[in-house]
Image 1 (cartoon, rainbow, N blue to C red):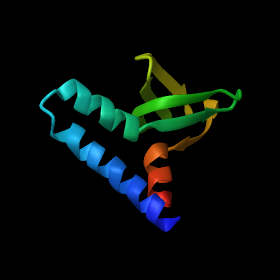
Image 2 (cartoon, rainbow, N blue to C red; image 1 turned 120 degrees about the horizontal axis):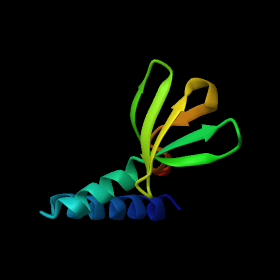
Image 3 (tube, rainbow, N blue to C red; image 1 turned 135 degrees about the vertical axis):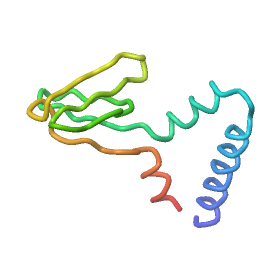
Image 4 (cartoon, helix red, strand yellow; image 1 turned 180 degrees about the vertical axis):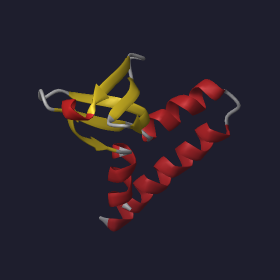
Length: 93
C-alpha cells in the first residue's frame, strides 16, 4: 500500500513539475491555483472554494473558481481552510 501511495505521489509531483516548466503561463497559473485552493465556511452554511487575496481588519477578499470576487466580514464566516488540496497530498506522503 505504501508503494502505491508513493508512486501516486511521485506521479503527481512529476506532472506538477512538467506543467510548471511549460512556457504557457495560463496553464501554470491554472495548476498552481488548483493546488492552492482555499475554503471559506460561511455562517449561513454555504462553502466557498477559491483563493483568498487579502485578510485584514476582519475582512476577507478573494475570488472563486468562477472568477467571482467575494468580500466577507469576520462576523459572516466561521473559518478559513488554507491550501486544502495540498493538505490532503501531504497526508498521503
